[in-house]
Image (cartoon, rainbow, N blue to C red; front, side):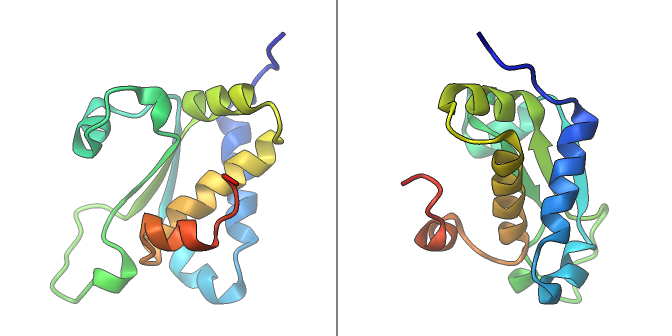
Length: 131
């Protein structure tokens, strides 16, 4: 039996709680990022990452990391962290060993780490989620 999944609004609420839990020094920079919660990633997102299966993408940071920004960067839109509800729910169902709030927080913090300038390798070096 599969567990029912939370709505887009509930996922966003969980993500905002995770953002609010960031250390105080990260809060000002986090407020500059738009949080977008949708059911599925867009095709261009998958294409940019060389992915074909939308279930493989639970979140995405779309922007220029803080460590690479300069005054010459004039963004057309704010940096964004995207969360994809259906892939998150699929992972939650497949794992079966994690609370949905913890998974949403994990994906949210991972994507915000990219905004702060961390690479996937940097994140993996301290993230024990997958062990």
